[in-house]
Length: 146
Image (cartoon, rainbow, N blue to C red; front, side, top):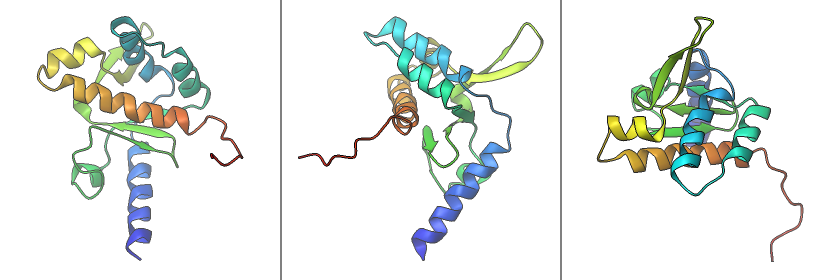
């Protein structure tokens, strides 16, 4: 019964987060490009998967803010809703040429300026959750691992 209630609260929390404005694909690119520039990594495949599968960025729901679910998590991935949920302080808003505001993940440099002591932990947690989003869409083998 407890797991059932938890599952409903996780789904409800995700639905409440989805009610907030979010965008697909592009909110992750600036963060991932900053990883490409500072580290010996290539995130182009991850960017492609997130965009193709319309992974969304959302802010924490009230249940998350109140600590009912995902307490103190810097980032989480909801596979049911295909949504990466980040704390407000890890996002920023860009105003486009057309005047529309778009929320995105801060770059490594922006995270470092905002939280000099713990930015590597925050950045690695965000990347970890993005990799859950990427992995959930990759084809799975039907063969058992020996």
